[in-house]
Image (cartoon, rainbow, N blue to C red; front, top):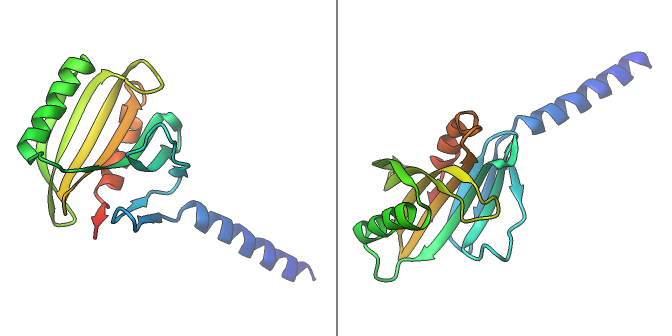
Length: 171
């Protein structure tokens, strides 16, 4: 009897641990994307005050220290260059920030670019924060994996942001 109890306990613990260390892929069929979350990163409910955010994620340390959003915008008349220029203006003028990096990258065989910047948060925290955006133009839409962190927590979440952003798949 003791052996059976031990077996079932071991099986239960293994099941719980495997869930804790499993990656989760989140799909949004309506907008045409999928993204894989790392273990410990948590999907949050979408908020009506963020109508262009189709996925909200919290880092293991919490949403203030690490928040990731997938935003989708209609491309309209934007080209990649005009959109980049608009983002640069927004960061430097509206956010009173500075661009730390602006470089082309490849995400799942798609051309993209990555902005890293610091600036005054326009969102709910009202403080100076560190941001990283991965941007892809596809099928008349602009897909942005928007990552935000406190400056103090940046180094602890940066690798997670990069890893998750690199999993973006577009239909």
